[in-house]
Length: 68
Image (tube, rainbow, N blue to C red; front, side, top):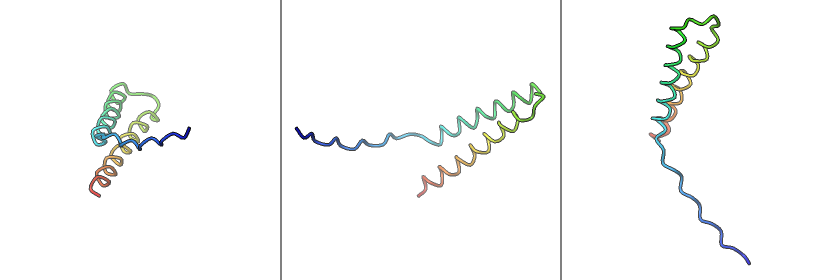
């Protein structure tokens, strides 16, 4: 009644650079929309700016990882 162990699955090939670029672009669109709407609270602007900054950091990280 012993079963054979299942073979390990191969990792899915993904395009991480495109994923991060799309996410960063969406944060940029949100920032522009908020600047046009002129919100009373600046915390939403800083949230978008942080999203853009983290997206750029993630892009640099992924490119560095792929070079290795």
